[in-house]
Image (cartoon, rainbow, N blue to C red; front, side):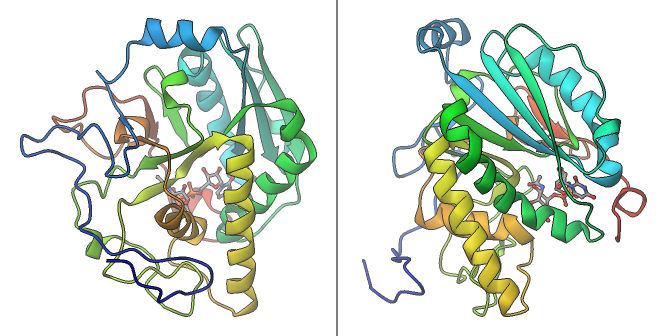
Length: 297
Ligand code: UD2
């Protein structure tokens, strides 16, 4: 059933919300729009590396480390160098207000790092919110010429296993580790119609984590630009979505479906014990004491 009750330019479709797991508790191979859900066993690492080696691609990776979050950079970068697109061209763009605190990490062949200085913020929400705007500008000014794909990753995280070319697609989202068994009515989407991130209880596919956004540079540009515009409208109306840019990302992905989904292997949380359906943890949020590290908790 398609109906044209539209808010802004989104067209709504009503359908049964997808499951993440099958009846035996294994990850389903695809989203109902035929987008693969990447997980252990869904690709042959050697084969897929060979295929992508011929393409001579560059993967830009943006990381934000403002204030006390610079302490996460060392582990993030060192573990990335062991696991993240090993053997492929990677360019990290580290946004920070404290460039002198960016650690020197030995980078593998054809891995590069650029530090970009930004102004200090004293609200953590502001830092998180401005990531979309900063990504939009970086893509406009540099990445359209410098890279093929881009990922934006949370810095308070660590790689524990391979993250490679199997994750590439035109628009890529990661299923949040805390909500893949939750019915969409209980997702922590923004539920106030006054916000541009609003999603009614009757809608929603998956709950995507804001810690991982990826895709072709031009597709991520559209995402970042749209979310930034929606964030600006909310700001003008003095409303902040429940989970800041993560709420706007979920709205975007609902109406612009990702072409590839990453299973929670690619976005785990160190506080969460491994579950049987997770065969390998590849990237995980590290434990942090919010009160100690956020500028204004
Ligand atoms: C959740 C999301 C995160 C983001 C946030 C928005 C997941 C697993 N986590 O994480 O992606 O959507 O909610 O509210 O999806 N940062 C700094 N300095 C600061 C504060 C934040 O650099 O003082 C940057 C840093 O890159 C960090 C990111 O902003 O990784 C997200 O902030 P967070 O990790 O505090 O948010 P969190 O863990 O609640």
